[in-house]
Amino acid sequence: MKPLKILLITIRLGLGLLFVYAGIQKFIPKPPPPNSDVEVTLPDHVVKIKALIGGMKQTGYFWTMLGVAELLAGVLLLSQVYALLGAVLLVPVTLNIFLFHLFLKPNEPGETALTALYLAANLFLIGYAYPQLKTVFLNHKA
Image 1 (tube, helix red, strand yellow):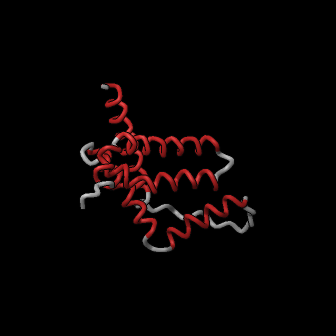
Image 2 (cartoon, rainbow, N blue to C red; image 1 turned 135 degrees about the vertical axis):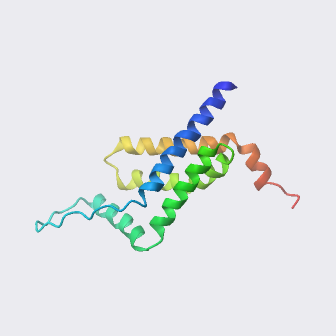
């Protein structure tokens, strides 16, 4: 039983640190790319990536909201006390990151595998805590 507890804590800390870092990065302004007079034809998947991320940033709120969600979930995972809440909050985020890499970066199987690992680790945390979640979501006495 002790190795399982160590694995759970390690996954919580790893995902927590990863998403705290990712959340902070959303708030650090990036310098605009240098303008070039040379017209470059980008591959189709790069155009889609730029359109997706550009659209999220242009809404004026979504990129910031994503950063806040990543930061909050990361801090909750690091707290260990509210780790289950952080893991539940991260499900749509990790799923979208995985699907982003699966469909928009098909030429990078290493990154896709890594993001699949993030999703699997997150689902493992939730699966381990299923008895707790079951009492919350499947309580029919309400």
